[in-house]
Length: 393
Image 1 (cartoon, rainbow, N blue to C red):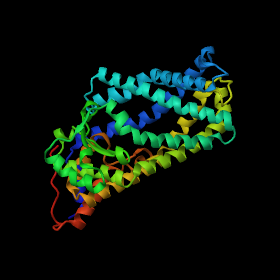
Image 2: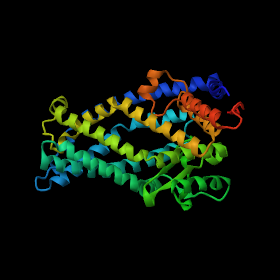
Image 3: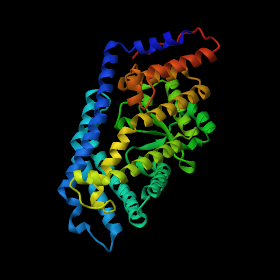
Image 4: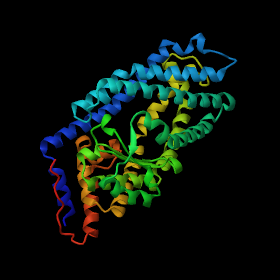
């Protein structure tokens, strides 16, 4: 089997119109990334210039933790509210324009409001802890604060499948049938009990077929979007779920916490050094330990995170390749993985340039992933000369 020819056949079957549309959508996402940074900086600047975080009702020398919590919560609520038009355009208007979602506007806004409140509360608790460290430790506060962030991310990883995710989607036991029968052996092999297999209404937010394997220990579970029952073959479900199980078995979530913790350390160190300059630009006179300076502090963190995007994307692509390999080796659905990947090409240009992929892609290009799958197929199938079936859509 000619792996490159098979790969080209899969992707070319999309047709020039779909390929052009995928390229336009992907290029737009690159600009969305830059636009989000600009909106974040401008929003933080507006909040700082409004002096809302210096109001008397927030200040209490006797209760600094209360001040830090309320200031952080107000900042996050204002930040989300002011940037809502941009969020609406990026996450709803564009998704509908490219048929990536059919979620009604009212439902989108209700979920945005719920997410904003949860983020404000959890974020304010975390920032209150960081400001406590700032007041108590002073120098090298960023080192201790990174530890708090790492612990918080670990707790979130544990709690999210059973506490947060059910707030946004309905999770039900995977119904008896071919899909459940196919996934039970895979879940047992991964150490996830069969009673932890779920289906969720992912079509509520997106038309994309997704699955995920998350949690740790008692919270571990495998969840498949209901889109799988509408627009995916059984081999695709097996291949994609095997990929997600690969993330779980290879502990990519734990590795991601470590990587993000290092980035947090760099971000907070940079914030410590650059705070006086950015505070002056924002018209903020408060010292770094005062929550009134939060807009300046968060601006540095946003800039560092943006600049670190190529590095984070590189690590993510490495994890995705590893998960693909796990799926191929443990499930063996090379063609199922290929057809599922081609469907993702509608929102991820399958043939980007090398520089574009390195800078902007958090997943390897579809062409490279399918090619690796075809290489695996040629090496492992009894009849390597057999041609893959070509997807009809």
